[in-house]
Image 1 (cartoon, rainbow, N blue to C red):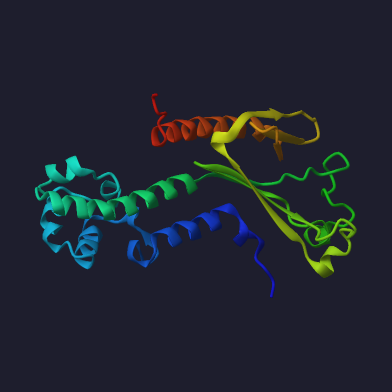
Image 2 (cartoon, one colour; image 1 turned 60 degrees about the horizontal axis):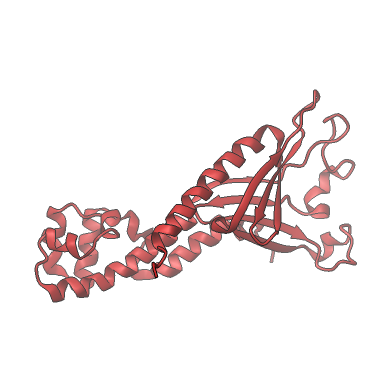
Length: 250
């Protein structure tokens, strides 16, 4: 049975992770709780035993996004005055907030595939003269994706160091998924060049605090834009991490 390489990327894995965290109760018909409208929230309230809260939530226009932001003060403000009811309901809110955080972390911001520069003054494909068998011999190009939480690089490789790429069509390729947490990145740089015959390859170099590097090969015309996107999302991830994990004063 042939494996779909694209099904192994970060976007697909993140979607499955969100659905697993939510479970069937908070992921109805493939729609996560954070995407629910007011009526869907009302249906869920009935299902989990809070039918008496439906009028209050509808009057306050509580949809899935608002549901994940509720706290004790807001529950009291919309009319849930019983302390015990608020505390019990907040147990449900904690689960929903975990889903919302997971969805935010796994939200796909940018994705692309490895750029394979044409050869012979950009006249011939990268894999010339094996153009018709590029993926089966050399493996599919790496795929890159950026979420609010990480940079993912998915690469194909032969199963053994002694196996040449010409044996790969018979034995297939292994797939390595490399995730880099945005909060652990030290620097993101890029290298580009120009060529009168076409768009040469450029590099986005991601360096982590422990000295490791991940290199993304893209078109030179794209690397500066991608680097800026990654730096902006990295800064947002650091701010979000500081908010969720505040330092403790001693």
